[in-house]
Image (cartoon, rainbow, N blue to C red):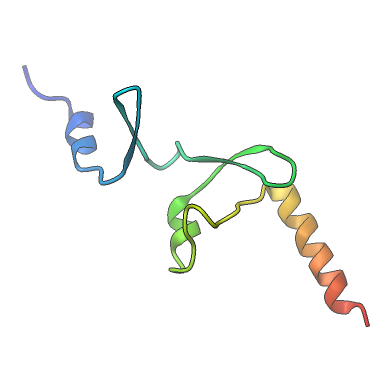
Length: 82
């Protein structure tokens, strides 16, 4: 019996979590976050979040699209205020 390709690919995975003794591989498309403002669950691209070298998994907050836009508008209004 030939080994399945997905098992070979997963054996090369460097990061995973363990839950009840099972490995949960961290892969593109299976990382999620709760928006710190509204609680909405959104998919997160860890590569994009951590690519600047300043992010970390414990101190980084990822906002949903709507809350991110609202925060940007609030910041812009604060900067424009005298």
